[in-house]
Length: 269
Image (cartoon, rainbow, N blue to C red; front, side):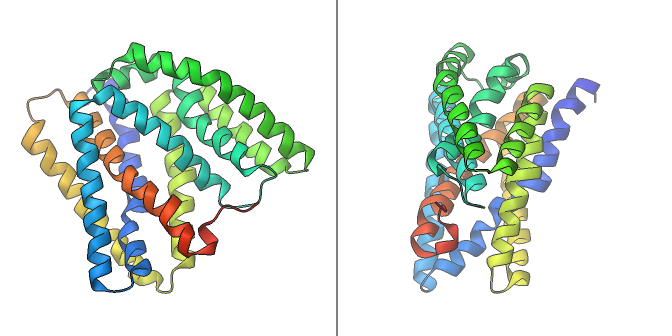
């Protein structure tokens, strides 16, 4: 294995081992919010159906699916950060923080990001054009966010955001998103679910079981469809298409369904 391949695969391995388990907790979350066996089965079926539809859309429309993935990730990443504490302007914070990793990162680190988009069979010119256009409102939102939070004395959240910006500037795209995904997003989500669970051991067992299931499905997809594809493209496709597939139902569950039923999942204001 060449050094370039190791450099590419290592962050994907880290995100798989440290990031996938946070989504695997969705099985436990579904169980806790279900009113009975049939309700639980219906939610699981809806989750799988949405994931399957997402995979199908990526196969047919990779560029549109990538742009959709980036758009929903802004909201999901932003809500994940903002949900932890009070902000003066939560909506500004959501887009300023989520956009840091989804808009600013690939735009600033385009040289390394473009390679990833190309491996994923997207039209890189279209993706870059959309990102450049999105940078203008994002910069204005980020300035408004920092100014508002500083005005209200929320220095810690500003320092955290600036730390993220430093990571975005210094690290290549895949490594920067790996640091955020593993060190911020997934870690916080797992800690939150486990701390709010009535049975942390049961939640952990669900997490391990669904992580194993997810990895088994990914391995099966690779063996069935990607053995003849160059390893870099195959691994990136399996990882990111799989991430997109589970992010759609995961986001609906965590960002929209749970806040309706449990107050601690709502955005503080």
